[in-house]
Length: 295
Image (cartoon, rainbow, N blue to C red):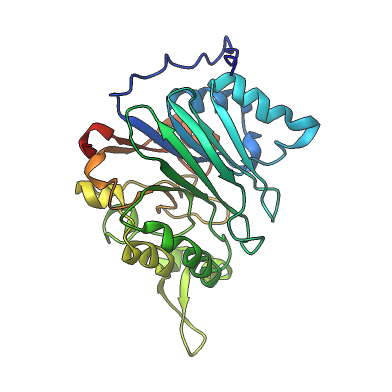
């Protein structure tokens, strides 16, 4: 495979050694990056990810996927494009060749049943004796019940005998109960938006946040890095304080199967003045030290 040309604006980092932590990132860049595309590219490159899931790659299929190829050149990474079934919110999973090599890809594991889609890829990684499985999901944004149904397709991938990552904008809160996982003050949220996030009670009123999708994933065995590391989870959305969902919360994740949990090293959210300006979501980056898995 020939080398990917480097953009002078966003030259990618030198390929990491096999012993370096594997950096996995997820970012909903909002509306295809139209807020400020050059700055979006700079932010994506700054993540220095080995695996990068991008949601809302709107319009990236236009003009023969011109924007997709521009991102490839800027990042020095290979793309796996998964078309969305709704609103053109496509998914792109980038991987840094040659350290990471794709051995299989399915852009839609649900045969069209998801609101957006969930993609599955198989990778070999330098220094890792078995394949790494990556799921890339953008959860149903409008229906908690829809998200639970979609999560049901994904729980089987928490199989403890496999090395699996689940990344994306899951559109559901975490389970720690602290930090960005605290219950919102629903009196401060427009009532016509409550149906996106709250449990619908038998009498037609709303209860607390609907976290059933995350509960299903956790009960199946997926590990949430902030919870595993004893962190107070930082927000990944809500920082705009305006628009459709003006409250701090978690929506974006990198989850690990139990086989990967011993390799977990670090987790962070890129919350800066620039990242807050560029999208209504913030990038999340999780590092795993594959040498901790042993042989």
